[in-house]
Image (cartoon, rainbow, N blue to C red; front, top):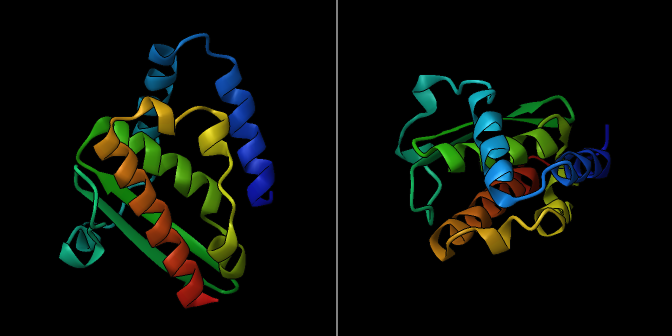
Amino acid sequence: MTINEIQDEIIEEFAFFDDWMEKYEYIIDLGKSLPLIDPKYKDELHLIKGCQSQVWLHAENAGQQVDFTADSDAIITKGIIALLVRVLSGQPAEEVAKADLYFIDKIGLKEHLSPTRSNGLVSMVKQMKMYGVAMA
């Protein structure tokens, strides 16, 4: 699946929920299903700067694509990074670098986050795109 196909799938999933409490519960569930990051990557080098909570992100160059693993110490943040990993992991590095992550606005995520969480989201996206640039 392409980045846009995955984003469209996420937009459809979020359309099933009537209110933001249900959407938050779904985001938390997504975080629980996030593949575990190798504990050796839970260090200062892999910590995303600009996040209120701790978020670790590791990227691996797997042939022509980037594979991401991540973790967070906060349940909602873990769900948010799980969404980003779902969209960008396994994609070509070039596509990751230039991805337009429109699903964030379409599902209303940014507007339902606190300013500090919203800044953290921007930092996560920026870091993932930087890995894409570096591996392209």
